[in-house]
Length: 592
Image: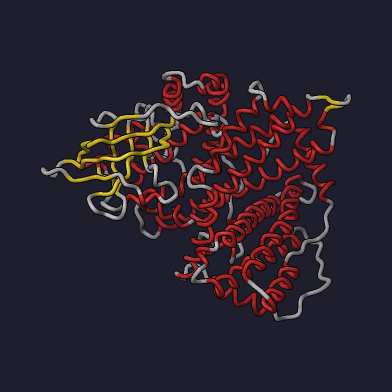
């Protein structure tokens, strides 16, 4: 494992080697068994009762979580001594993907096993874990995470919920209001964030539902995920034992950020599962539906939609499991360096916070695209609640808001990258200077190489140079006001998201090429077509950035550099998409 490959954000300045990443073709037998258990659970227990779930039938969601607990699905990464399976991080992503096909159940499951359970697992002391963790793993108790408030959404640390120490020093007295609390209607254990006395930073508390002074608003009526319990929760002088302070005083904001990083990458895995399920519906309906005497799957317009769904799913999947393995590798390295296991895990995930945010944005927008195209393929039937894609369309929309809006995550991607540069964790200034030198040199002409992936690797490097070029120039010129230039930051972030996915897909193909000839494999066409589309996409985003801050000779030089770097060989995108669609239609579903 090369050291560069386990530096979060390092993908933009360092070469990643194919042998350093994990690809879905490498799942072992045990992991495949876990995925099959998840698939069977969704098919047998969830899909048949989706309407009952959406109607919030009393006790149904709790009973389904109980069944998931019986199968061990509520403790994939939890240590064995607390009833868990103690698998690695990427295996938890695999389970999340396959359970991501469960609509509102997936939301309840994700909230319980993720933001509900993980604060206790990673930050709880031994007494707290002994008391609560096994109950959460078995499903006997359900969990929720209480962070958001009416005036504290994206700016979570501005929350007004207060915790004051009682006169006898035995309890914290919590008062405040929380909203949009998933599993709020039935959760037994609440992780509540509040500020102690006059602290400016949050602390976190383990609060039992039975504690006196907790009340609940009725269930929220939502556009989608209707079966997910979502309530406002009020805390009126709730007495919480001092021993239920989670971690240390004023550590709550850090807990919230680290748990959100986990939530982001897990959301990406969950929506990957939903995307694959909807993709299968698109394929099957297009084959069955006939118009003008032919199956609509025979028409180019439909084939293009199926191909584009396929492309987005493939590159997302490649990026999700590349990230999962990178986190696992960093955790292992941290443990070798002498860190405690929990701290190793948290530091490993924190190290890849940039990639977690990328996966969250890319995944939620992949699912949005896939379900939108599915409704279009279904036509009028897609708008009917009798079709499976109508629910998918409504349920998808929340994912661009969950775990921090996509806009906030886009801004965080660039902000975190620049901060790593300022701290010296990534040598961004050197690469920016090297681009300035290259722009003054004579460009290469007429170079060609038919060796497999050489042209793709060169194009990917050139796209990275575009990001170095525009980011370096923007920082140099707008350093003091850059945080206010959100439009520019959003465009740079879009470039980074595309590059990470394009590189992940190409590395996957390269790794497979060591075992088989990939020249004519459909996975090469998927990666190649995404890269081809990315060149024009990044060219447009970078041009927007340049014209937003540069003028005269500076703008001319940067635009000339952009023209030099934004190049890729000519391919036939229509033919690629036809071959991709033909493959999908023959297989009837996503098979990789």
